[in-house]
Amino acid sequence: MEILPNRLISWRRDFHRYPEQGFLEMRTASIVAAELDRLGFELALGQDVMKKEACMGKPDDALTESHYDWAKENGANEAYLAYFKNGYTGIVATLDTKRPGPTLAFRFDMDALPITESDALNHAPKQLGFRSIVEGSMHACGHDAHTAIGLGLANMLAKEKDQLNGVMKIIFQPAEEGTRGAKAMVEAGVVDDVDYFIASHIGTGVPHRHFVAATNGFMATTKLNITFSGIASHAGGSPEEGKNALLAAANATLNMHAICRHSAGDSRVHVGELHAGSGRNVVASHAELIAETRGETSEVNQYMKEQVENIVAGAASMYGVDYHIKVVGEALNSICSDDLAETLANIAKEHPFMEKVVVHDDLSAGSEDATYFINEVQRQGGQATYCIFGTELAAGHHHECFDIDEASLLPAVEILHAFAKKCK
Image (cartoon, rainbow, N blue to C red; front, side):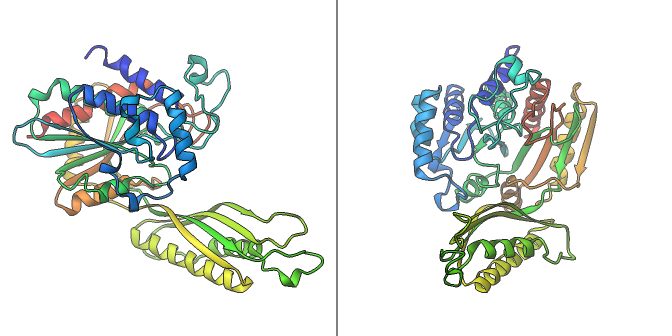
């Protein structure tokens, strides 16, 4: 596979240049599907691998339709693009060796972030000509690299199919950002038959040439869009006739950040955006909050979520306004499987690229909806883990100057491939 390192870089830079946010990964998914089909994988696409009712925070129809046109004009593979037209952009590719053995699944996310990429001359994607062409969208978390690693793994598995046993599944997931896409794929049953499941990430503060076999620090989370609806009136002439949605939202914001913490584990609450009102002298009839809760366990997060709901209801009642809470993303906490982590760690120790291997990392690691896959596979008796391939970062994740060391791509493919070959 001498040409694979160059192909990995080429794929990664192409996806980086054409970033697509969650449930809009139409160009990306069409290119991935075409390559997987060429390699001989059996494909399940779009709504066949995503339960419509479980999709959270999906863009509206107008944006979805507009993005389909954009994808078509910007290099999507039109033979597969139609499968993703409605914004269900998941892919499950299956390679059956026809020999007895376990079912393995590898999950890779594809979506970008709502960030405008740096235009600085010393920013490598700018220097090398693969800076995002989409202002306001950027691969600032490495999912472009993840998708390339997934394609690299698919190539190695297909080439060495006669050396493998059992069934290989490669899952390309949309909308990890905002923890929106995994639940829909789990509820569609894509891991119901899986014995071993591996999700992976590049970077996340893990040093270059380091490998973490099991990340246990993901917090459960709920993403909430909260709206308050009141009655507008003239703030000077007839303020008593109004019902002030802005004040309800402000009251809710302050009280959310004052929620009493839970003794069973760490917790978080954050209001990231507040939009309200229509004029200086108008009692605001509308307000919207963008908020999230997190908990060290799913139980702690549920407590935080319930407290937010109580506070919102109280603030609405205090100011006589109506309210609506919509869940637009959610994830669980998870604990990786020890035996699987040990196996991966031992494989990584044998790889010449890796200078340090850590079996377990229990430090807080934000949130990840791969936890839905992990918990479901474990619930059905399988093993699952979330591993990290360290890399040099130009800037932290979700930063406008984010970039990776592309030398990390091939070792990631090779370690995952070595695990597939080891399973009997």
